[in-house]
Amino acid sequence: MAGPAFRAAAVRVRVPATSANLGPGFDALGLSLGLYDDVVVRVADSGLHIDIAGEGSDNLPRDEKHLLVRSMRAAFDALGGQPRGLEIVCANRIPHGRGLGSSSAAICAGIVAARAVTIGGEHRLDDDALLELATEIEGHPDNVAACLLGGFTLAWMEGGVGRAVRSEPSDSIVPVVFVPGKPVLTETARGLLPRNVPHVDAAANAGRAALLVEALTRRPELLMPATEDRLHQEYRAPAMPESAALVERLRADGIPAVISGAGPTVLALASEETAQKVEMSAGEGWAANRLGLDLSGASVLPLAAAA
Figure 1 (cartoon, rainbow, N blue to C red):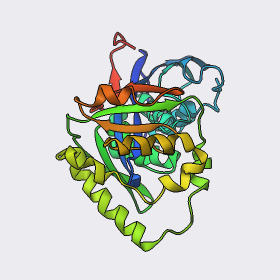
Figure 2 (figure 1 turned 180 degrees about the horizontal axis):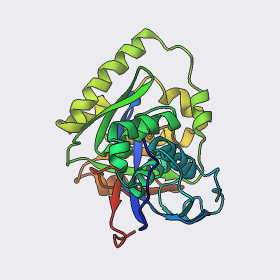
Figure 3 (figure 1 turned 60 degrees about the vertical axis):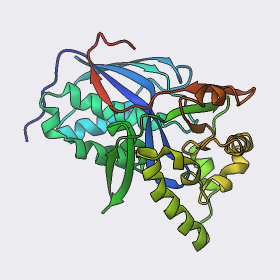
């Protein structure tokens, strides 16, 4: 295959925040949320220039170490060759280290942007290949699947390759996220998980995860029992006691609430009737945000689109 040619015009890519696990769906289920990072990429004559505004602007690298750049490089290799230079502008809104898929957003933005600036990129790297590459970079497919596809996703590994199916979440569900001021590293949260769990807990989670597919898509009245978890949230609680306490308090009030991803953000799956009350229930130390459900996933937008 001959090396690729690149577009002269810049492209804008928008990627959503995501919440993985959703209670019992550990490393499998994901939900795409209406909070977005925007990236504008232009192929340049030489060099690498990165501007970053918003989340991470004070500490993210502005060189080849940036996760978005590393993801772009991997995608360009898969597309057949690297451009001579890149100009990248990032507008970041997804909180970092909070369990809302910021790393998956960077990965997906990078690979989608690389494909978009490559002439014929969709033929060289189709959507299945995008998911495979994103999973390879991230290490697991749950967040990247939701970020790429939008909606509600079920992801799995098959022969070492990331796969996913997408479903339409019920439009009556109103996500409310409670974001604390301090992050928790995913590595820290994963390190608290035991190597083995009781068979009864695994069986309970399998049933709840299956029920959650029905609850999120067609019967949201089942979300309370469907979001029960025995595999990871209790084990991770020592790293995020305030988050665990908030989940317990919300659930005691009849609100389906879970740890978002590896935490420490808490996700409540409210309704139009309960969303306002839920937003006001967290107390000090939390940024409560009512979000929409993102149904589009990673998108290439006109440059004139609002940031």
